[in-house]
Image 1 (cartoon, rainbow, N blue to C red):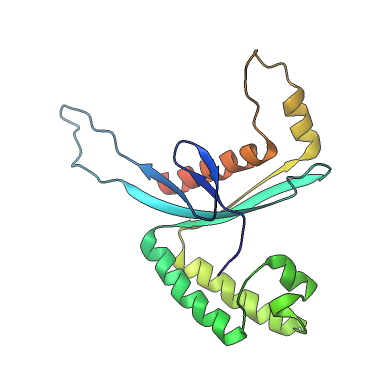
Image 2 (spheres, rainbow, N blue to C red; image 1 turned 90 degrees about the vertical axis):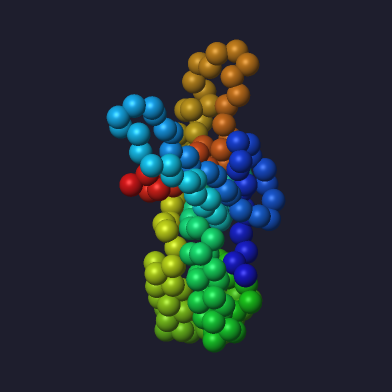
Amino acid sequence: VIASGVICMEARYECASSSLRFRRRTLHRSGPSVEPERSFMILTAYFDESGTHAGAELSAMAGFVGDARQWRKFEKRVGKLFKRFRVDVFHTIDVRRTDKDFEDWKVDRKIEFLDEFQHIINDTLESGVASFIRDDDYKYYSGLNWPKKTRRDSKYGILFRACLSQIIDTVGH
């Protein structure tokens, strides 16, 4: 299990312990340039954020995206890795602090685990995404002259939109 704060989106934000899903459809035109019908694809992305609380100088959101087959491959391989290293729940901060499942781990063991974990991610998933915003930049954004009744995004919302944009760019290529 990889524990994280997860965002869901299907035309709206919802915080829950599930996944982000969105669909891409190819629009069809009539005439000589008609393409054969394409089906939509469903991708799932898992995100985690850091520093979106008040007072943080830098906020970040990062995650990974893949289709159902890719996530099944990922889960199978990462499950074996976690079993071999006796890891139940992965939090980067626990590795960094040598805490919880990573208690008493030496640097070499951490490097070996993270190296294998990174290879599994690269081999199985479609893409990783990340976005960052400095608190000063968010304050500038919030202080802009907005039309009445305009809803400004939170840091969380801006970071999410940036990650979603990266996913769309990745899928589009």
